[in-house]
Image (cartoon, rainbow, N blue to C red; front, side, top):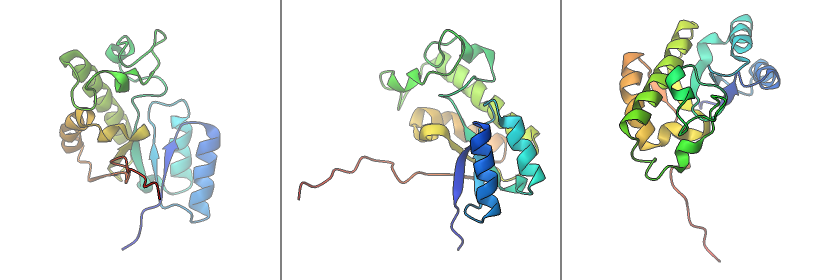
Length: 171
């Protein structure tokens, strides 16, 4: 079994993109996940293809940083600020771990679909997903991702080891 060493945030900024290219070149990582809604996404796509690791790029779904791809979520203050930029506020809604209202579900589902579609249309084939700040592990978000994973034929997703808070002993 070969362990997967993944670098998140591909597409976030030029310095991150360059670091990921360097890590691939040095054999420090064997996979990355790309943020399709960030300003350096096109540069990341170019670099992955130029350096021969486009088949090792999954999607890093992002619902709390940068600008969304869809219009409805940009005006939803549970997700975005007045400038239409993700603000992470949905994580502080009561019960957001388990439940999002109909409007929030519709906005979020549309955004996740748009990000997945952009990933696929960019020619990536790894078909792996995870998310910025592990938001895909929220039940309310995962419920929306399961049908999208089937729709786009995603084959794998990351499950972070920090699924629960471990109490530390006072020894």
